[in-house]
Length: 90
Image (cartoon, rainbow, N blue to C red; front, side, top):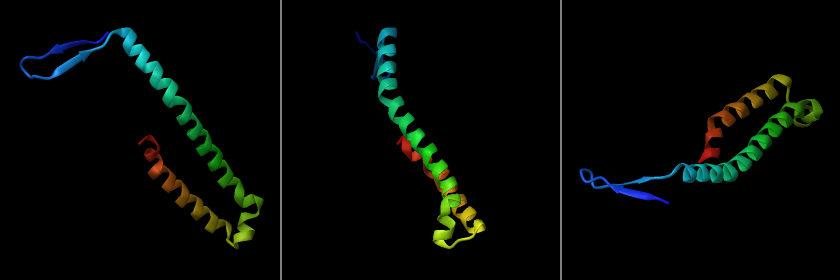
């Protein structure tokens, strides 16, 4: 049960939760956030692995690029991935 205290000096309501309510809220957050974030992390890992193996599978020959050009493409991809990875959390 939620107990509410009114701070007379500030005029705002401060809610105090019991330990069982805090634990229940944490469990709910864990069960709703951890699985989707885990799936996104797994897909990100698979994607990085596939990009790394694409050149050896013939992508460089198909695109007509050299190994150095492919390295620059991967560098740009990694920089963009690192720069925008935090958007997943929004």
